[in-house]
Image 1 (cartoon, rainbow, N blue to C red):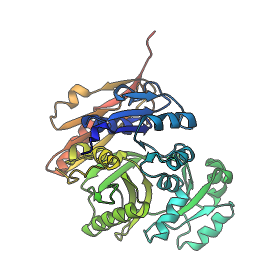
Image 2 (tube, rainbow, N blue to C red):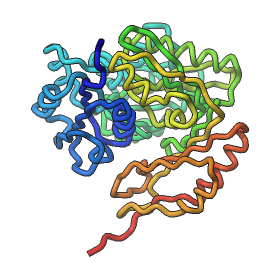
Image 3 (cartoon, rainbow, N blue to C red):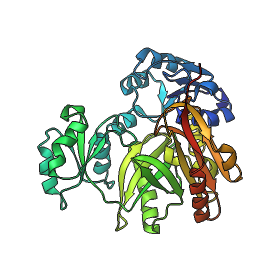
Length: 389
């Protein structure tokens, strides 16, 4: 019999996603080592060990590998080349380095999806600015177009909209020029943005969470509503697409597949994250087994927990309202509603639009949950205060 609690887990990244992975890992008694450059990162206080090093520090990755049985990560923008070396030395890394290297480059990611008949917007890699005009000519409605950096973007960073022909050169400049590594996509006038959290085990078994409906403000996730308010056809297609994505990438662990739903109910994949995701936070209170628990189960080799929705759920991000020492206001007032669950990430510094926490409301009536969420959203704030002397 295998004593799974003797397994040691290494997590690259000590932010809120890493912290929530650790909370689930510690519940099962696992030893966890974090690698993150920030001494007081959210994961620091609950890690068994914290290697303080930059994400491109090859020696730190090898140190981590010597301390653990399996390595995972909380975001994509890490040293995949060093992980490749570790994998070749028979260190276990989930999701695989192959999946990571493909997904972290948005062009390679889209190419892999298209090659496997997974619906995506029309796209192309950009080598010359003039090719944007040729791409526009191929589209029935030439503009707008979405220009993206192929690597490094998140929360809207690395994306810019080309609204018309006159905007082409400025758009390329805004993203740092052709040498930055750019790709072009046909803009999708979507009806809804949705996402699906999916998990795949070492044995290939897969589970698919309920489809989430997402609302963004300034390209940052603001509110997630579950179940998504879309047609059954779109719901079924989204789940099928998510399952196929997990088969294509053969990823072990929790993935998020972000999608668009068009006016005619087509479902197209926007982007994939090979890790737990902000839009999956609803699973902590909304599902029997959350995305972080099933990620830990997957990378250790344990069977999955139940991903069914317990009750309709609304998740709201708490973003920094201003810069300075993080201060929460409105907590006592918010907690007068017994159905609210507030999660603070432990970040000492508030920055405008930085993800500082989130809260969820679970209710049998989705509209009631939404109404409560909007009321609480107006009272709970994270602001930056002055530093003491």
